[in-house]
Amino acid sequence: MTQTYERVALIGLGLIASSMFWAMKRAGAARHVTGYARSSETRDTARRIGLCDQICDTAIEAVKDADLVVLAVPVGVMGHVAAEIGPHLKPGATITDVGSVKRQVIDDVSPHVPETVHFVPAHPLAGTEHSGPESGFATLFDNRWCLIVPSENSDTRAVETLEAFWRALGSNVDVMDPDHHDLVLAVTSHCPHLIAYTMVGVADDLRRVTDSEVIKYSAAGFRDFTRIAASDPTMWRDVFLMNKDATLEILGRFTEELFALQRAIRQGDGDLLHDYFTRTRAIRRGIIEAGQDTAAADFGRSR
Amino acid sequence: MTQTYERVALIGLGLIASSMFWAMKRAGAARHVTGYARSSETRDTARRIGLCDQICDTAIEAVKDADLVVLAVPVGVMGHVAAEIGPHLKPGATITDVGSVKRQVIDDVSPHVPETVHFVPAHPLAGTEHSGPESGFATLFDNRWCLIVPSENSDTRAVETLEAFWRALGSNVDVMDPDHHDLVLAVTSHCPHLIAYTMVGVADDLRRVTDSEVIKYSAAGFRDFTRIAASDPTMWRDVFLMNKDATLEILGRFTEELFALQRAIRQGDGDLLHDYFTRTRAIRRGIIEAGQDTAAADFGRSR
Image 1 (tube, helix red, strand yellow):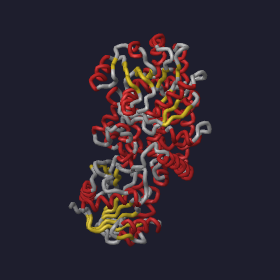
Image 2 (cartoon, rainbow over the protein chains, first blue to last red; image 1 turned 180 degrees about the horizontal axis):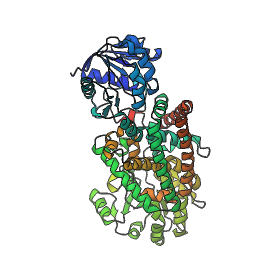
Image 3 (cartoon, rainbow over the protein chains, first blue to last red; image 1 turned 120 degrees about the vertical axis):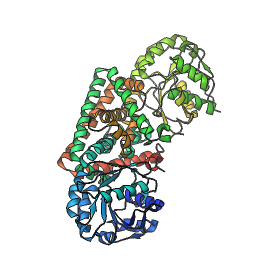
Image 4 (tube, each protein chain N blue to C red; image 1 turned 180 degrees about the vertical axis):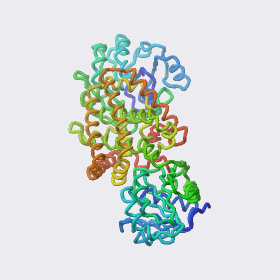
């Protein structure tokens, strides 16, 4: 048992918050966990499946007396939620978030955090294509990375306690500054998602190839794209709008490279293609060695 | 036991051919299987692991007396191999291939097939990111689709026997014409692979984000791309060069769509993004319902 906070409040009850609850229970990381979601349907589901020690009907009630408040809502509404709960936070408490974008969230949330409360932004790099309170599970964060992104005036002890909390939930922890975080995530997450969405959209749109053909023959590569293109639309809309600059920068690099490969195909430059495809294998090897994926063929689907 | 051919010859001993051997053994689909690979190292490995009933040192020796000859080499060299073995094929035999491109392979191989031999092109839509004789396994084709792509003058009985053969190996079978095949595969396989290679290349190239950051933080989406970008470089070089027109057509559609989404991000058009991301979820559902992927969260990696 590694208790780091007495009372934790989860605002938003999707995949991340529900997984945090089960991981906290597994680790004994908090004595009492309250939860709040805007939709009464989500709150009912949470009560039915035993998510959180107490589900509250308002965010204000949920954060009362909490030592840690976790904003686990789409990044586009973090500011609104912070404005609502700010005046009700307990002096000495820590408020954190789990958003995939950091600079804009810091700008939106900070003005609403009282001086007596510590704001320590964070981002657990874990997820699946499923969403909602029933999609969570205790092992989601195991051996994944959680990036802690302290703002300039974050309290050192508050940062250290939050690090210990995420470690208790199974994560590895790194500290990163907001702008670098947003660039790294544009590369490792935001652009891959946008590209996957685009490719699936193209397939869906093509009159000369039917959806049923795309679906039947997807095992040839396409289906790996559909997994991430099935992620929560609201979450991802907000991510792109709020990490606009880094996303557009990386997309610019991407189209530049894609045009170069397209040109090599048109001109029949096999050497360029072969060299390019050889280089990308090393990255895959690195990911498997770092324990961030399985070496099982085809993710172990076929055996 | 569903024996469809007495003697089968596998030319090329990579992932597909080695999986075909194990699947044939499982089904009792052939009495005797010979194998040939250009590299003596591959032949030695095949002998060591018991791949094929007999490994031959020349392709000509391997195809002698074979009732079915399978070309399982990169699509760029199918024509050369056909020219070499053509005069040595047994009258009445069937020659097939497993290439990911059909129109160009038909054009390259057909001139070398004697009038007494049936040429029935095919393409099993199955694979993993691993390659080589040791990567094969008997269940690779189970519940996957094999597309039979008869040329205008393919013999009906030869086509039906090949269909029965692929069914015995675990596949579902569809018949398709060459040009439609190449377009469908450009969408479901060739473009997704090129896009994945490109995104991994961009990440590798970026000076401001290190490879070790990309690797550590890949679980946020990027790693799904690295699996298909780890596929065999020679095979894929040939695919793009030989399915040039369809690949470039679909890439054109892709960049057009990507630019539209990029513009929506720049202009802050959240509705357009949300609608687009919602539409793509339905395709994913279709793939899971069609048994072409697992609904397990994150491909079942995390639990």
